[in-house]
Length: 216
Ligand code: GAR
Image (cartoon, rainbow, N blue to C red; front, side, top):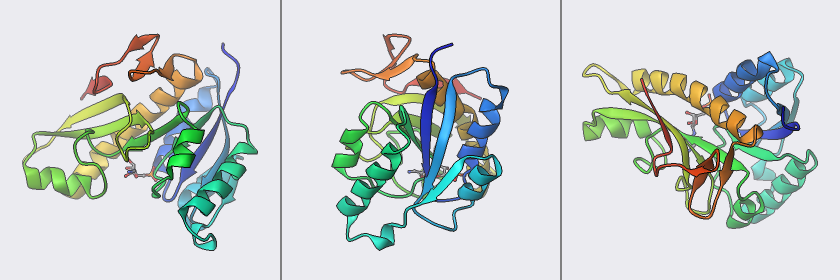
């Protein structure tokens, strides 16, 4: 078993992905250790999930800072007190400054509710329906300075059914997120996943542009 991989999770909301990681890593058969959860919102339910599991939960309110750079600098300072090998964005609804992203280059992962590069940004389920797409899904990627644009690690693809609503799609996409995010974090912690010059590497092999593909 490789050395422990300390992880800090950033979130702004309910923390379904955090919970999926907590549940997935319960078995102890992996090197992941979630050291802390940090939220920019004091009312984020994800903080409660962390506390319930004995994980340190911290709040850093972006409204208390004068601008993005100042907040991100304070965030870096707080994250680095935990000396994580990996920082995981799990529904952290803030655009991060270039300085922040560079600081964690190669050790910053994000999950997004679409098959990137399709549907960057918000309201992805509704946009998929409006476009009449046959497929939808979610993506885990390394974060780079391009918003929702970093090298893809893993994607889960689901079919869009004729009676789907944005809510039903969201539900099925979330279920897939809860599979692929713990998987990607586990790969990273095991030393199998890294960011190379040309893209994401799994077991030393460059992944395809869409990352590792899982179809349901
Ligand atoms: C997830 O669906 C995640 O993909 C999305 O926020 C949700 C958080 O849910 N992230 C983004 O849209 C980032 N661009 P959770 O709080 O239950 O994990």
